[in-house]
Amino acid sequence: MADLSIKQKKEWAQQLYCEGNITQKAIADKVGVSEKTLSKWANDDNWDRLRKSLLISKQEQLSHMYEQLSEINAAIRKKNPGERYANSKEADIMAKITASIEQLEEETNITDVFEVGKRFITFMQQNDFEKSKELVDYFDAFIKHCLKAN
Image (cartoon, rainbow, N blue to C red; front, side, top):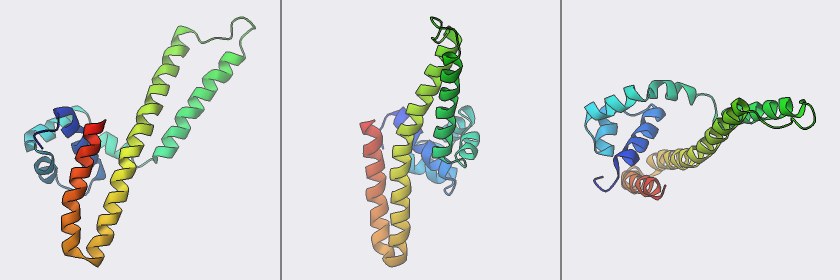
């Protein structure tokens, strides 16, 4: 794991942590950091809150954000002609919501990859346990590759 940056290791660890079915020690070992470092990341960035928020589907979160943008745009359309533009506060909110949407859509892609891989490995464990152990190593390498590409 030495060829992954700290940021990439942190992203991978966060993904594993939010899945909720692996111990912090196992995450630290898999990602290549100490348990103390992992615990610090989880506390500093409030991964427990993030894990809970992921119980709401990504699609629901995206839908809510698009609805917020729509409401801001509707309020702007109600302004007098010649004044139908976002003020600085509205523009700031719109920029933040748009950035959140982009980030969530990007995260959805790696999350989808992770979920499909997990489901496939579970399927393989039921059909060929020895082969599934080998696949876990390949899958970890693939996730590492995906993180490096971002």
